[in-house]
Amino acid sequence: MVAVEKAGIPAVAIAARSFARAWQSCVDGWGQPGTAFVTIPHATTGQQADFIRKMVDEQIDGIIQGLTTIPAAPKTSGEMQNRGQTTEIFTIEMDETPEGLDAVNRFLAERDWSDGIPVLPPTPVAVERMLKATRRQPQDVLMVMEPGFGLATVEKIAINAVMAGCRPEQFPVLLAAIDCLAQPQMNHRDMQVSGHSEAPIILVNGPIAQKAGLNFGTTAMGPGVVNSANTAIGRALRLCLINIGYCKAGSGDPNFVGLPTKFGMCIAENEEVSPWQPYHMDQGFQREESAVTVVTVTGPTTIIDSSSRSPEDTLDNIASMMFYRNAGAGGWLRGWQSAQVGHTNQRVPYQGPYHPIILSPSRAVIMAEAGMSKQDAQEWLHQHSRVSLKSLLATRDVPRDAAGNWLNHPELQHLENDPNATVPALESPEQYLLFVTGGTTHYAHFFYGTYGIATVGVEGG
Image 1 (tube, rainbow, N blue to C red):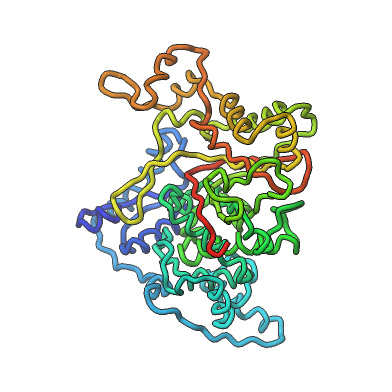
Image 2 (tube, one colour; image 1 turned 180 degrees about the vertical axis):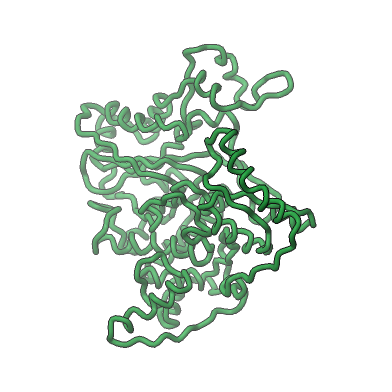
């Protein structure tokens, strides 16, 4: 829409009312803040055609006005205008009164520079201390964060890390997480602007977990002092997405209802008690190296495994989570998804989704004691988590050539007319990401993945 306007062709967007602020934020970011739009009461997804036409017809006068009037371009916010300048330093007076103690948080709230929870003041001394935890230069750019196209410099990331309560020894984990988000297959723009309740989860492996003080035992994803590192790192990433990426609630972030997981998720593998090799070794790292993996997920769903009497029972409980139609459901027959590379016309294909399964050590031990490796468990899930091909073809178009032949996986087309044929929900066993952590119990968490996945090494880890 912005490209059409910039080409001199009048255009009017039609946006659901709840997306109005998100629309304005996006066109601000694209440098065309005056692009016209009208609002309709509801999103069109899943609505009947007559209902959609009625909503649009009611806005015809506004559409005509938008096509025939040249509006004065609204001023963008100061933060958008000044984002290319050198770092500003603000002076805020504090005293021992309740108002004085809260002065920094009120200052940030007035500018929408927070996640809504009180932060630590990012003083120059505190930020400089954080920067000493990395060999990278303060103005090094790790990525361009959308939807606001903010430059994620090391210094800006450090500012948000201080605000979140991170300690310097935790900073390398945060930097690695942002290195992951910078990979095209993470499709981070869609994550940022989606109305879906999805968020990044940070998975940590190697010695850095203990250096950073991460809890990988009981209640590892819960509140409490024991989880201060987990909480601070996860929260710091969210603050970066808000303050650098301009993904603010109700504007850049149009998430229809949100989830508490969007405040931040960071967890380390319990390598000490896991019977299997840690996840980063599956990705080619050495055990003594440290790595961070980031996956975009929604959920979680708790798996109760108290009545299992065999490894297959445990895996069957996990496989039962695959009933959700959009959790993969054979979509790989349509081909891989693709993501835009930065601000170019290039796109890269990626395999997805990846579903993290946060597995209690005791559940992993049940499988290992029966002689089952992690790869065996993944293969079992791959073979037993299946969907009806007939149902899939009834709801999703499979790309074909002019002769009607499948473009992807033509070796399976002979099953097309078999009413009893099934296919794996996901394309490969590795998409079931088994991550052993937490305390020993009969529970597990299943997260529905949405896009790609990335794993990178940790500086000094």
